[in-house]
Image 1 (cartoon, helix red, strand yellow):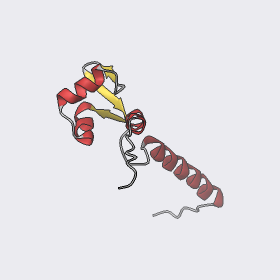
Image 2 (cartoon, helix red, strand yellow):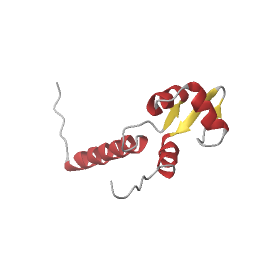
Image 3 (tube, one colour):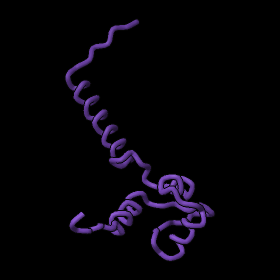
Length: 95
């Protein structure tokens, strides 16, 4: 096996490539580990709702979605935003 000399420039280039790959991986996932786009089945499982409830939420405009071909996709960030906007704070005093 021939000997190969690795220079500091080679190591620097490797480091830059490695950091770029890590940045790409981090950018492709959200902080919670949820995919960027969810299909209907995945969202039903996540929200613990039935297909009919999910359809109602789409129809009444509660959940934004994108339809490509026959597949409906939901942006995980937008779903999270809807959940935060619809949070109910129970402010019963004296309990």
